[in-house]
Length: 147
Image (cartoon, rainbow, N blue to C red):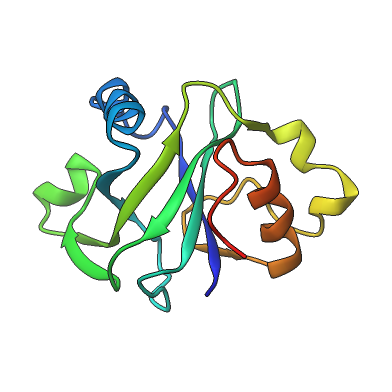
């Protein structure tokens, strides 16, 4: 099992049902969604993920959960690209937690125990080294079910 970093930049994509998903997770414990995995194709069901908010403050990890599918192509998340007929690579995911403000601020991730790792990549799908992922799981709001 691996752990991946997915990213969300509000400057690049408006997440219209964000508040609804937060409420569903609070009510149901998790929610199924879909997220772009960038160019990463070696993701498997059961792998874990964290979601990093970038672009505008507050920056940091705002969500996490488990990957529920192998990567697949679907209509691109950017409208201009979708109109051209372009696709992106996605995975289905279960958010187990999602917060309006970071549970782990970007500044905290710059500490030595979370290095070396690029916490501000341009795209989703970076594999987080196991030793760093374990630290993140310990800090996550629901203490991920990872052993």
